[in-house]
Image (cartoon, rainbow, N blue to C red; front, side, top):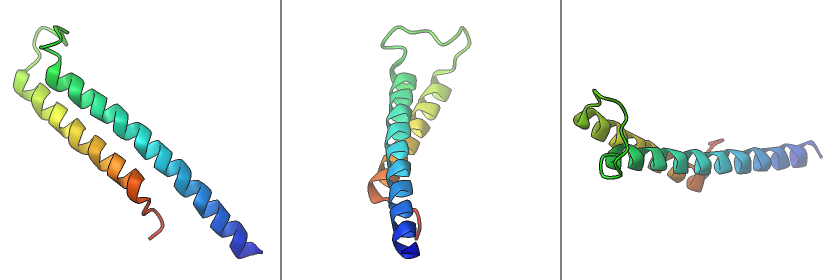
Length: 79
């Protein structure tokens, strides 16, 4: 009985963390795309924004977002 409850609880936690990883991954991908292409969209981030820093941060956001989506797909939380 107790093991069934623990298994059910782990399954629910895994599902919630997976949904959170997907959501955060998508948000980070959107942020990365924004930072990479904000000049093409004619959106100013400030008067002294560095193009190299924007591209670096955008690339980091894309990598982190991809990793979060992968982690949500694998669902390897309790191993």
